[in-house]
Length: 228
Image 1 (cartoon, rainbow, N blue to C red):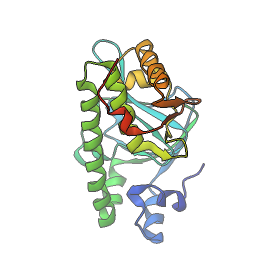
Image 2 (spheres, rainbow, N blue to C red):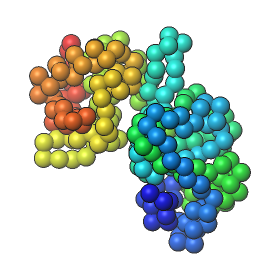
Image 3 (cartoon, rainbow, N blue to C red):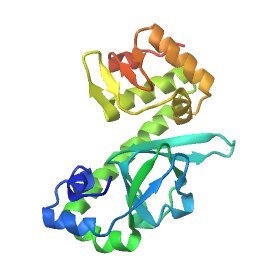
Image 4 (cartoon, rainbow, N blue to C red):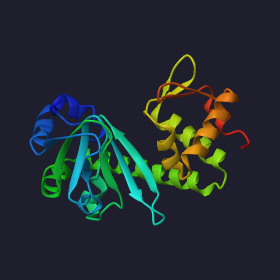
């Protein structure tokens, strides 16, 4: 889908801009399509661009010294990434990969600095976003501090309910499409262990697994004393 001012307004960074300001911002973005599995940005490129996902799904991940992949985040339609590097020029130790046919809107550092940061409303939105990124980082640290796989997955699901949850009659539906392997890579455990823990949570009626979707019947149940 092409980038429009209407779409930009759905992105939190630009939600408060006027129509004229949106058109100014729109002019500096370029679009590119990617096939499933394509590398969108390598680590060394993350200081050069900010991107918005127009359609599809991307994975932000880094390769650990052990050779295991650690998933840092998934970004879907309307999500954006790379704005922090636009500010300090640092790279992000991660590679961004298309998980499905994906369309991305890019803006380079020069245009970002000259155009986007000239708007006070965007600057304020950036501050809000930085607070969110910090909280996300603290959440991931919290997940990885547990030695117990059950505790890691319970904590990760609890925070996903808060960040990506949608209320339904059955409970909180996590809107991200997550496989067992992806949950394993997010929490630093094996896929087999993740499957065992998720099956155990289903058996206890803590959650229901639909097709790559998870419905948590009561998020507070995830934070009861951890039991394997």
